Amino acid sequence: MAMSCRDRVLAAMHKEPLDRPPVAVFTTCDTVDMMDACGASWPEAHSDPRKMAALGCAQADYFGLESVRAGFCLTEEAERLGCKMRMGGKTSSPMILSHPYTYDPQKRLFDEPEKMEEFMPVEDFVKGGRVKTAVDAMGIMHKTHGKDYVVVGGNTGPFTLAGHLLNAENLIYSVWTDPERAKKWVKAVAPYCRAFGEALLANGADVVQMSEPSASTDILSPSDFTQMSGQFVKHALGDLPGMTVLHICGDSRGIIPYMYDTGVTGISVEEKVPPKEAVEIADDRGVLVGNVGCAFPLFKGTPKDVADAANASADAGFDIISAGCGVPIGTPADNIRAMVDAIKSRV
Image (cartoon, rainbow, N blue to C red):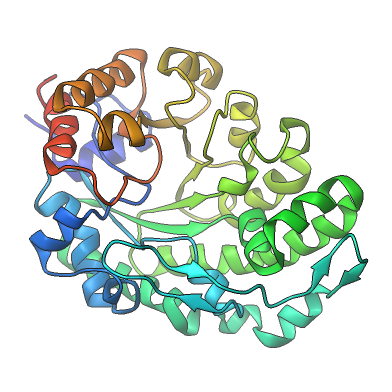
């Protein structure tokens, strides 16, 4: 008997036997075509839980993906902790306009994390703003789609969030010049990330998927990953009482083992890591999600290009076939459906 979408994704997350790999995007997937199909669009869907839920479920309702997922950006937490925002429009993401805390390693001018904690106690963090919007959307999605689909809640990693609050360039500079100060801030941010993850799970999410792009090897060296990001991801994500997936952008070959060391259920990797090599390095330590290219083939390629890439990830042994990162907002509907159809035809 064929497996349901929910059962297939859950089996993959538990490394159980499958009729075929599921095809499910755990990173963001909220294209213009999805907005038009479901009638819920940016920027309203960032702040209205019902519209967020409708758009988060559109990937399954209209495009055949086997999970549902919200929210849609990495600025929800930053805004809640004091960043000023430009919310963008239907085709533009929210943008951080200012960093609320002083952190200038060249001038030696620093705010301490206590200033953030006074502004927003951890226990109040999930009670307002777009953080609460995402938590409320989980409840709606669980009620409308939880019987048939795995519900994924997305949040932001602690090193990335600290960079949003302080200025990412300054934080990264201090990794080399004042690492203990940098770690102090990331450590202070991690409980907020954990509280968000706990609230997502408590309100209906089956999986928390954390994106930690500032820990990419393009920015942070593999030798610094565990001390500057990994140990705090473990507290904020790996130790949560539920299924978890960590996504880090770029060529993650040098940090795949360290990503698993955080205790997560699975990791998500980009197409910059060749599929067979990703599977070899992962060494069956946990779930492996990915890694169909977002720019090419999903955004700029043909449906055949997408199908070939999806099959390459499946042939290599990825547990869940997915986009390598967040799906570009202008990605053609036919290309998303090609990824779905290529994997569903493997039965």
